[in-house]
Image (cartoon, rainbow, N blue to C red):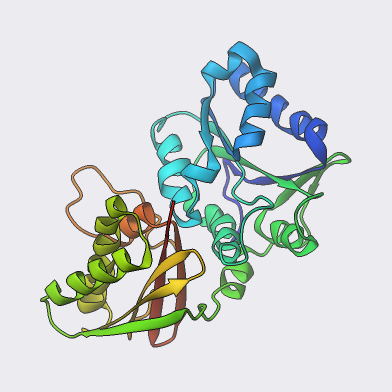
Amino acid sequence: MTASEGFAHPALFYRGADEYLDGTLPFIRAARAAGEPVAVAVPGPNLKLLRDALGADADEVRMLDMTEAGRNPGRIIATVLRAFADSHPDRPVRIIGEPIWADRSDLEYPACAQHEALINLAFTGRDATILCPYDTEQLAPWVIADAEATHPVLIDAGGTRASTRYAPLDIVDRYNQPLPEFDQPVEILVEGPDLTGARILTREHAGRAGVRAERVPDVELVVTELATNSLLHGGGTARIRLGASGRHFVCEVRDTGRLTDPLAGRHPSLPGQSGGRGLLLVHHVSDLVRTRTEVSATTIQAYFRVGA
């Protein structure tokens, strides 16, 4: 996998606010000077830093708090990056996207690393530049090493250079790991099209685990979509497990199919599209999605925060 012509995906390694602004403000101002649409999706404190530095010019930039827009790394490509790029189909776009920050959990990180690797595939043939900042003071050295594998170009206070470690597919494979176990799972085997019982049990267990009432329908939707996908494409059987992991309620669905498209669930839906949106919906409503693909099995875990 190589960066395509017209597409650039540099990593910005920064230490402190001054280096952050030195690396991002010229990027934004160059886009505006060239008449290119520009978006910024970064964690709240850095969003405020940029907004304050840009002043009135901030109104000309699409600004998103990545801790909300990208709380599930698996939805960033479709709903943040591609959503912005696709809204300007005939123009080059520039985006600052910061999906990895110090408070990301070990549970979230594998999905973050795979997301960064898959950007290169998702934007093949697109005229776009996506700059990804990495805080070298706060992030672990192995996170920075992974960034060197997912970005073909690296920028820091010393200048710009090509990455000698660029190998995004290796990152996709490395983090295709066995998924975490969780507490006291309830198991449901679905072998036919009637999902009524599975939906009822999901609703009951989600509420009992502390999922907020307004989010319980999202949990039910996820189990329905994942089980339906398994019945149609995963060998005709869905093995559902429901349980708790820390501050999350977990819905796991396993089948005997093989997920061959690494961007499954990350493709934006097309106008008038009537099907094929199940995994996209799962990514959209879940707080985190982890996937394990094997030769003859696929397991997907969807996480939902519990409590306030």
